[in-house]
Length: 97
Image 1 (spheres, rainbow, N blue to C red):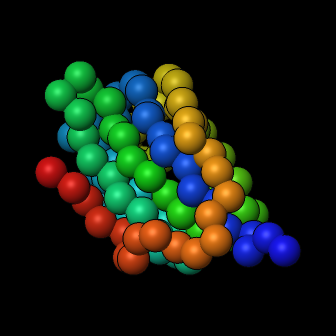
Image 2: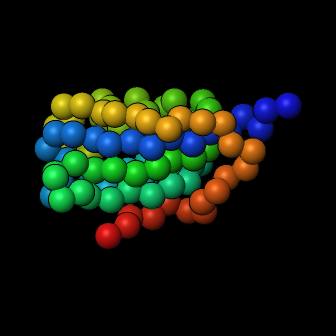
């Protein structure tokens, strides 16, 4: 029997640093009932991981690839390591530095 939970890693390309992208990602994740983390990279992208119910992860992927923070301009969203998980491995949604 499946738990219905999954985990996915992401990397967002475009104008995504200095536009509160991480803060909005945290807010969106929490509002969907997901857990995870997000951080800036030194190459100008934003990376992270999100875990939660599959339908909510699907919504989060759409948000990350099309919406983002109000001032961001997303050019590409890459999702990797998508996998089913028996239980959440993280708690809360945090910005890492």
